[in-house]
Image (cartoon, rainbow, N blue to C red; front, side, top):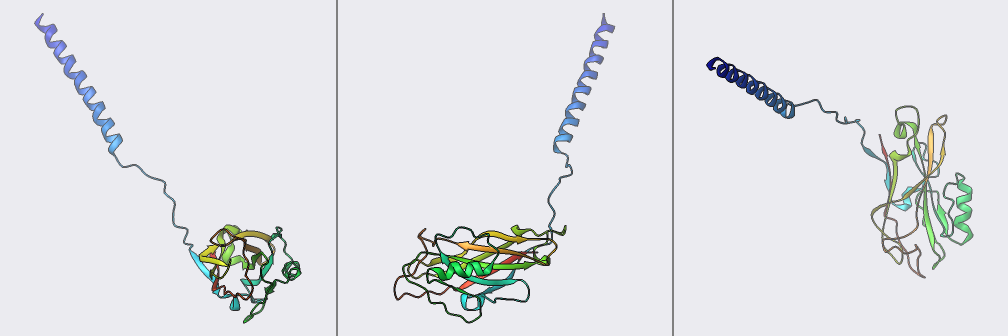
Length: 208
């Protein structure tokens, strides 16, 4: 009888050791550091390709990446995907608005006419390449700012809406039209009689 009690005690001690060992192993598994998969820095960052006021922005032919033209088109226009600058010019002049395709240029336009602003740009393959020989339009942006006169109150470097107009990997550039249709007060863009306004800066940036 005593021997059986001793055997039971031994069995109980063995079971306790096993349970304890399992608990220790579980604790170590939960608390032990394990390898984590984390995103690595791609070495890219946002760079200004061009920045300046309206008078300096439109270069016509910048000789590389840059702004090709700034167009004030009638607000009824919706096809910003057009890749023909001459069509944008027609839209701009049809309602006595206008466009800028040369440095140091002041534009006079009809008052009390709602318009949209279109900034036409091109960016080279170095500044917009995705690393696999393709253009990545997500890595291109244009911001615009105006101090506010009438309904032309665009503050804080507002991001313009992007439309890709030509993307061909066989060519050295990607072409895009950026547009804005309303000011900070969510109103249509226009100028009243005898008002003037300055677009203080347009920034073209690329992530590379």
